[in-house]
Length: 228
Image (cartoon, rainbow, N blue to C red; front, side):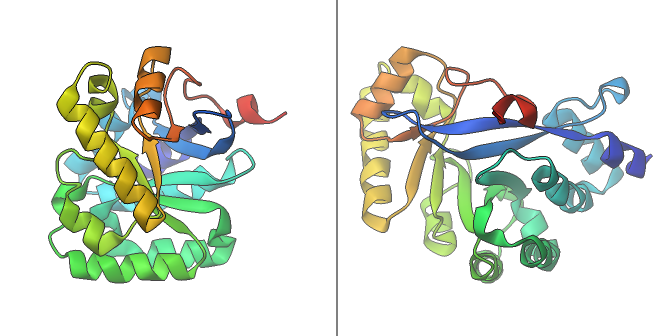
């Protein structure tokens, strides 16, 4: 059953776009499990894996699959923080095999990890392969300032709650401005997630965000949709 789920899981991709020029910086790989098993969404798939006690093993197994079928260019691959903490050497080993120069490891589900010093060591090894590191959901939940201190990400993925609030929220606007200044100062790329309308795009752009991702630009699609 476990092997069947891994074999049938596929990835779709969503571009990360420069808000002013439309330049594509890369594509985030988003997994889709077997629909006939009721595991089509990432949430369903990883909830099933959690119930089976194999979430981290599934994460490791899906990592190379995300790269194998990806469009040309940089690929952002989601990896749970607990996977890096417990199986980081497997991820690093694969990056060494394929070459990390076109890969950004996007760290998700930060809640489960408390030993940030150990995670920092893994991130350093990832950087040594030539890969970059992104921190997902910045500004929400467990993606705290302490995480920024230890991970020192190359990319900050701003939680979509701020993208939506940017249209009419003074508080949100000031937080986004602060994130934009911070990312500029440390040389990181700031990406606004969940951009669905031109109004959202204009709002975050006016607040200093240069890159975005969301349905306004493209829904997640098979790699073939992005190969000309």
